[in-house]
Image (tube, rainbow, N blue to C red; front, side, top):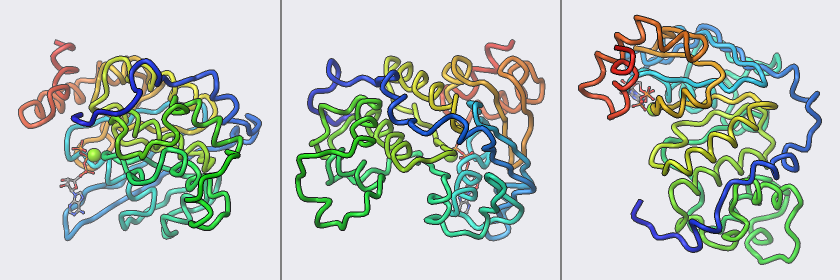
Length: 287
Ligand SMILES: Nc1ncnc2c1ncn2[C@@H]1O[C@H](COP(=O)(O)OP(=O)(O)OP(=O)(O)O)[C@@H](O)[C@H]1O
Ligand SMILES: [Mg+2]
């Protein structure tokens, strides 16, 4: 990233321990949570981008969703979060989400991040979190400097390691920090399901490790789906994996199971020529 963020490397670290304060809700609240996707289908002008996907993810799972470029991963996340028109069923906690507006889906506890970070660049880190926390104040009040920061926002700031840059415009943060800010925004809006689209793309190795630990901790309680191309990252942190190809679920299981699956290896070999650098690595390693 070309930006030169203030006070970065030595001052900014994810604080996984501080997460307990953000995940303040009792674990029981999340126990029965699960996301249940059935027969999900998204068609763009006759092109079937998601073709009858079934997927169940329970809380306590850190599910990775992988697959070559164009497999339909982002489109599936879009459909679940109300940003792409879809048919089939997406239920969370027994409630049908399909057909609801993206706003209502977010309020139902399903949050997502984007492949390109989507924070409010002109607003400070704190203001971004404030908005996500939806503390019920009007925009004017929100933009006024306040002395007191809501406890859950403060805890989220600590967790995502951005306390010292709280007053800095989000636009000048490093790419990794923006992703952490987005994750923090999901935490304060109390998302029970977090769908993260390539959260570690463009991150340094150190940032990846911190992000992985953060996601593992969040995944212990909440339902987390991570769309990712980075096989090394997937191997280290996934508790289960779903592989998509051409809009369909190709394979599902543990990291060991899917990486040993001949069909998965085949798909990754086939995509090597036009995928990102890491896309073929699994197949290469499997040889
Ligand atoms: N709005 C759209 N209109 C038409 N086609 C689309 C649209 N969005 C996505 N597609 C197509 O749907 C397919 C799936 O795209 P999608 O972005 O979901 O893939 P992906 O698995 O997220 O890929 P990547 O790993 O490159 O991010 C692609 O062929 C893409 O070109
Ligand atoms: Mg994508």
